[in-house]
Image (tube, rainbow, N blue to C red):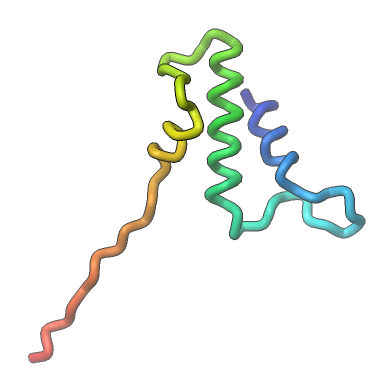
Length: 78
């Protein structure tokens, strides 16, 4: 599963160009995280270790991802 995660990250970087970063850009963090989650879940299923249903895996990974929600704060003008 660690190898699956590393392969998912590596597949999203452009290390073919000299001087290019080895890791994907931070602004793609949600996409990279989803790809890693999917790769690890598939590896766990392939190894017979998945305890959850892997049906519709991509949607389930995206549904489980945390999304920041910030409440609106209004200051009392007094």
